[in-house]
Image (cartoon, rainbow, N blue to C red; front, side, top):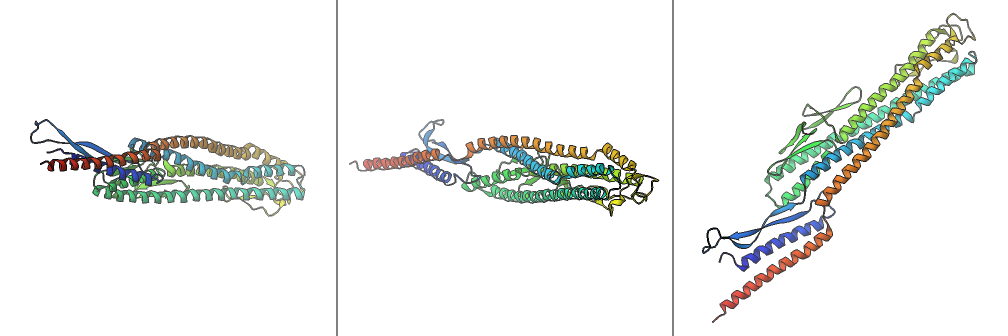
Length: 445
């Protein structure tokens, strides 16, 4: 007899036992990060008997096809894509906030206004020593404030560059782990417990990598994955058991770029892209801050050269340097301020040159430029925060959708545990009944 109760019950018991094992794994790993719920795949087992017609199939129980992971590759890809976008926005916002703090909290705008105010006060009495000393003090404060703002931008840039470098190291580490997982997957038995564990590791590593850069994946027949960094048009970073090396280069202006095995790599998402964008904005901010400082240096020193100081000598530069980082007040005392026009004698009360200096400063309007710079940075931070919040919401929705599919519901697992236990017991009972039937037949006299 090709199909008998014992073989049918045996196959059913084996399937129920496998299902019980998987249910126990699901319950034990309900809170494990990256774990994907498993179910058993079964199919009817058919067998032809000698006396049956060629096309006739007798059902002979059930067979276990393998272990199924309840993971949708499309939802996983969506989680990686939205997560990369959210990471990029968060990194950019963090960088922009550092830039805003560096420029705004140092009080550059206030120091420029205070310096211009001290010049206005000096115009009321150009020979007053205390007013001249106040101008020099405000000039010193302003130049030091520019220096602090520039140093703060340098510190912010170094922080972003260090974090980006650490991100590159992390991407290379994950790529190496993926290559090793690929090698093990290629040798793992199909639908085995070892393979499903490796698949969990593979998917977890891919999600981790997507937080740093946008990746595109291609799944091969043996369940290994080929990873392209920089999107579909990017370069292959992981193929089989081989992983390429991502590297970062820092330009003279502080911006960063990436290469993969020496070839330029375009990373448009993930935290690496966000830090790159923040550094680009920082470089632009530094240039604008240097331009404001340069305006003040040129206007004041040019006006100084066109007038005479309190001693009747041709005015000498008050500031040295070319930008925010190296601006410095070099005048030794208040008498060095050239308030009088060229040709005036010592202790002249002629304020003509000072008036012209103030007019030139008003025309250059460094305070307005600084105000515009601060407004631009603040607007960028506010706009990027709105974008970041929206992308975080989208990423959270995608992750919840995936979790609903791959996560373990303890209530459902408890029901499955009871059902498979009963199925196992029922198949055991069938085997007992079959044994009793055969014993009764053998005992017939």
